[in-house]
Length: 119
Image (cartoon, helix red, strand yellow):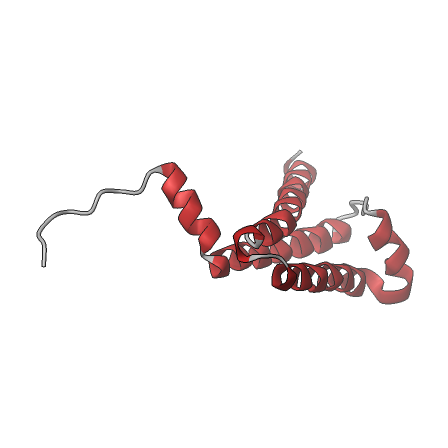
């Protein structure tokens, strides 16, 4: 046993730890999924337009919810397959590569919604 206080991780060590913690990365990916879908649906309900041409093409067949969820589930399926195929040291790039665009889209949607609501 030791009475020493552990030193805080450096930013680089913290990032390396987060990237090695795959469940954290997939959790962030799923949060970005939810943020993007919810803000897109809310924005569409407030009269904003969808800009993703794939989603636009799917909306007539599946509706807004079905189109968004279907496309995102396809992306997740491809990501999970890639995650299983890649060597362990590269796997962290997969959820990051999915979460970043979804997170950015969700944040952009939030900004547009706030500008629409509050002027």
